Amino acid sequence: MSLVPGKPFTFNGVVCVEYLCEEAGDELPLHSHRFNHITLCLNGVITAFTGDGKSITATPGDPPIEYVAGRKHGIRGESAGARFLNISPLIGWTEENAEPSA
Image (cartoon, rainbow, N blue to C red; front, side, top):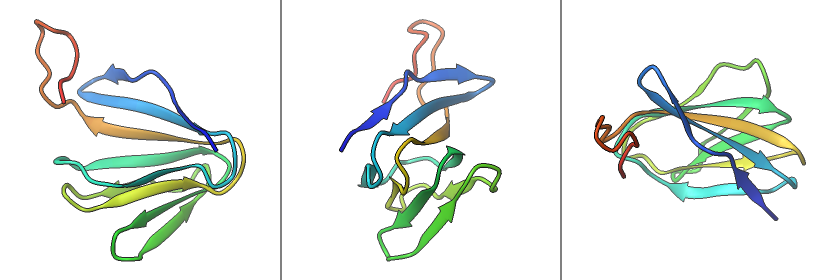
């Protein structure tokens, strides 16, 4: 299995990263962030899941999936070729380094 992240890009105060699920079942495992963010399904079918067993399935055109800061979540591609876009606020952005910091 191989989840392929694209190169992050920034626009108007957010950072975006597109992911490609080469095979059904490719996933970002449970993790959390110190900021809220959203995920959009671009192609195929994805499932977002949380540490407490809740899940939501999305296809292109569905509303964004929202994640609250500090809450564990993961994302799985349910179909080969599924693509999703994570959109997050820029954290630690400075003009000096022109890159967001972790």
